[in-house]
Image 1 (cartoon, rainbow, N blue to C red):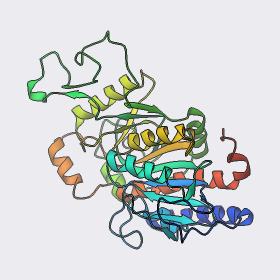
Image 2 (image 1 turned 60 degrees about the vertical axis):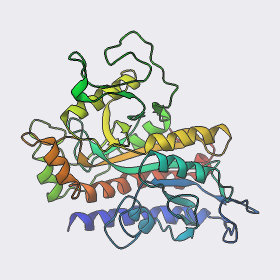
Image 3 (image 1 turned 90 degrees about the vertical axis):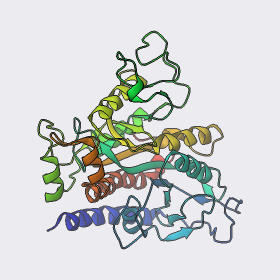
Length: 369
């Protein structure tokens, strides 16, 4: 049995369970087909779970899967809802009341898409849980490609001062430093976390999700096994895919290399005040969380009901003996762990979605723990 076949069978069983549970308790949902995007409806569409994907490759079904395709196919997201105020139309399952959104790549699009959805009166998002599920670069010091990391903290990697590395003073480790400091060696200025540089995921919800999924068996494959074996001296990078906890660094630049991985670890350590460990690199999550922070203030969404799950599609640095430029250019031709990471996102994330749906009468008013 192939890697993909095993994953599909496992996912199909998970999805069937979810649909079976929700179908028993499902109530008729309002018909919003005549409602204009962004305009009120007689009754808004209830949403239990929002699955947030960031991009798709090609079509939404039937070709190489990006982040959205498996959710659409396996969770029965068949109702298309026009969403012209954003990057991609929405898809909904009337039985499970799961909604799928594709924000588009980058912080600007993810912020705008999340705000657009949150402010759209066609939807009742007051009790919704939000699962951000995307691929990422992964630090080989912490995990292997295909592994899935639940973020406890999400840190922004763009809001900063910077000078070119060729012009930095000799005693500077990097030309990149927080805006409120007097340089990267400034140890006296108090940390200022009010500028959107760092977000903490609800610890109670994140820990529940990790404990629920930590033993999920993520399928392995010969392709990702061969790639991870190149990372000699990095035992975590050589393990079969697994579920872990670890922080997410969001930055609009697709960076790569050992030195920048060291910077990412230092950056996350600084902004979480030593509480976090850099594990995954991506682009969009601070945008989603900034929008959720604002939506929470007006009661349109609950920022304490957001989870961020990132699965490694590629390593953030090359294996020993390979230069960063060569490895980055090779990865741009196709991530070694793309297939593994999207399968991992679905298998791990679906376990959480299933749990929310199975005990909805409780979880709509009370956070799981």
